[in-house]
Length: 116
Length: 115
Image (cartoon, rainbow over all chains, first blue to last red; front, side, top):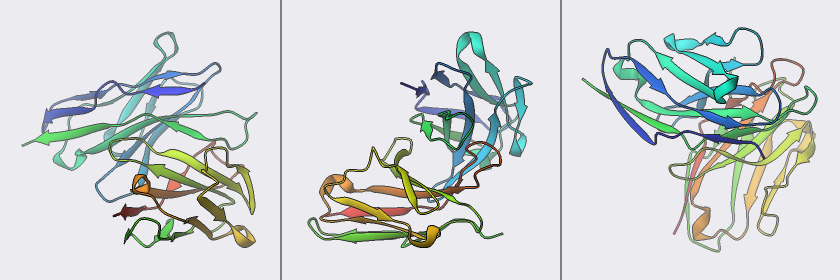
């Protein structure tokens, strides 16, 4: 069965520092991978997605992620964190149904705190 | 473009009472999802609709949960009777089939507290 692991429950970084959030997935075929962000009391917002092609994908708010098939990873990065980035981040893998809409399997999330 | 609308945003009820949540998806989105998000966890799918048809309800606890999507637009999720363990956030999401795979747009959720 498909699964997503986010090993870090909570990460604290200083404002201006770089950030990397880890995500590992288990999926038999080529995965469809996503990163979502959730601010307190808000729904999830899509940061970026990987379907195929270039393994380094750019997203909104200055985030990027790199797909590494050999490591079954899709880590999220940002070179310089802003205080407004404090939120919870979820990695997800999309189940495939021959290209049709499928379901998302989410990790448990990583809470990001930003120190001034 | 308006986003996914959910109401109410917060609901507090006593156990054994019924409760209902409403979702209005983004206009033109024919796929609609209901997710359950427990504290400190990622969302877990309860049910997925394609238009008015529930195409995946395998994770919906059918003894107490029910859902409907009349006319393939708005949807209602109901719990009857509610239990203490149902306290969670219930998220609705919608997507447009035929475009980017599985790009789902989420509403703000309904936070349910069962006392």
